[in-house]
Length: 515
Image (tube, rainbow, N blue to C red):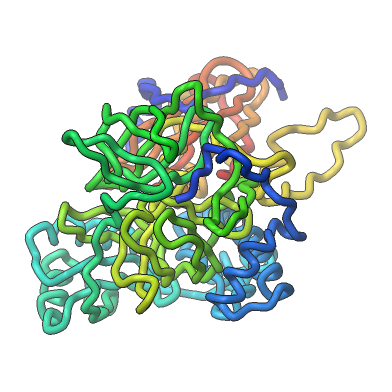
């Protein structure tokens, strides 16, 4: 087969006729005078400072902490691959209470073998993760004017959607679920008197300041990117200028979303500021940032903020909708870590892997509470930003073992991708969806695919993403003669590949993954 590769960047492409017919708080970006460089980490990316915080908040010794973090990093890569491999049978993944056992839910017993082969424990469930997300989306649409509810999220471990209601509002929560069309066995109501709010503050101290209305408000820097830093969206509207900890002009908010689909922002800094791959723990140390492999539910996680410093806990749920006084925000990650005003925008780490930026929560670091963070990879994908990392940082899942090429045959890049699918198109103009005629859930990240087309045929490769109405739209495509490669960086969601026979017929093979 031919090897003429065509790269497709992170752009929105218009589907061709054939495809259309197929209706399927840290100062991470600065170095204070006299500040030290990032200190070397212990094995597994566990810095001594983070180890101390995990010992204090999670009761783990050094060996236990290193084991949990190493397992979380491994589980993040395996979960993403299994989501693509099992497609519409995928029901979500989480680490068990021991912090090391990866459990993966599937709706079909036939998918269990793939889970076991990856070193995880399969759990047979009734609803796929895509179905749970659809149910949560229905709540998003139906709950705009419902009082007494503070949020709702997908709980993959129980295979249900959890609605968080204030005391005395359980009946209202169940009524909402019924109006949204959710079956009673798909919903659990959790009673809580917590009232989440964005952790936004105007008190002085460390950090960076947003210049608003003749005054200043304070937030915490999230993570360094090559042109600035990411933070919370509620920490400034687009066009707002910022000032650094040293009262010097720093940058401008160029991207901000809050409330709505996210709580994420990006500040482009001027030439006086040097983005560095570290997190300030406000105890005289800098924690290294080596990558951005997303940790699963159940993983240990730590955050830092300019008000309270560094605290640790556990990821409890993902894709939660939180109702703040300013409006609902979807897609947040729920934790049992404490935080306070001014910590907003601050970084979350699992070991040395960047996870997200503080959004809001309830309680404080005296009595405890829960805090929500905005996943980092969403803003990286939305703005095509590059995270600044330490040398040698990775965090990606190890590559799949590639069988050696037969003598005289060139090894195919397609064979190196962990998810492999094959198909046959018998008539020009036809199209097939993969995986297996369906779709797959993907976290925010980079999709990579490679198509081996039949000799003499022109097969196009199309990547599509479902919108909130379940309709698929093309986000990238690779067309022309020969075999195809495709890369696309996008937000989390439901995706599918479509192989379109522009001309010719025959068998094809498709390899793909998302990282």
